[in-house]
Length: 110
Length: 116
Image (tube, rainbow over all chains, first blue to last red; front, side):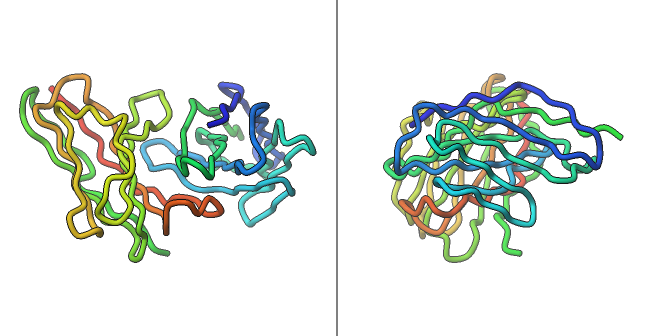
């Protein structure tokens, strides 16, 4: 399974866009990029996923570079409730597993 | 919105005692996963079920951990005997079917285990 690299922590002002980067340079053609977040003491929550096209849903946007070696999760208007650990995961269609790294701790401040 | 149910929410047990966690996945979800999350780390996959069969338990410490999903619906994870290092959050997740990667897992709220 391809590994991902994320910054350990980021800050964002409330109301501003939060842009969380992820590198996955060894990703292969049939592997999806998934994003989950985990608010303190809760289970991980699914945010969004994509293969090669940019994706948007009610929670966030996912921008995947053309070579698919990196991606960015965008929270367009961050709120205090978006403070959480965000995990970028490459999911293999062969193993079907979600293998978590250590994620990015996003702190949204007033 | 459908949820993955886990119980208990918190558990404190003494070292060398047995402890068990229960998980009820979303109705109709064939695949069930157990993860362990040590404080400050990401979740680590312990075991994966497809219906009642174990698909992968390569990361499950089988000398003290066991997992079952007898009727392919709910599941139990057991630790016997518990050790201090087992203190962690135990998470259960489910998805419709193995091999469908265009679908995320749904996680439960977890069981926080403290071994004293």
